[in-house]
Length: 47
Image (cartoon, rainbow, N blue to C red):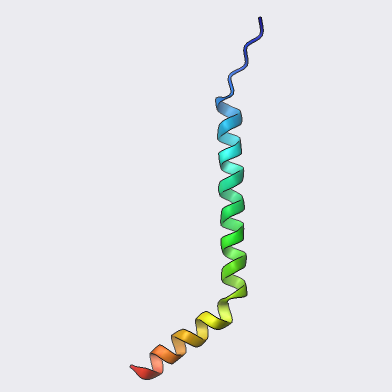
C-alpha cells in the first residue's frame, strides 16, 4: 500500500560516495605534496 520512491536515497548514496572520493583525493595529494614539489623543482631547474 505504501510505495516509497528510492530516487532520493540513491542520489544521497552517490553524493556520499563522491564526497568520500574527494576527501581521499585531497588526503592523497596532501601526503604526496613533498614528492610532487621535488619533481616539479627538478623539472624547473632542468629547464
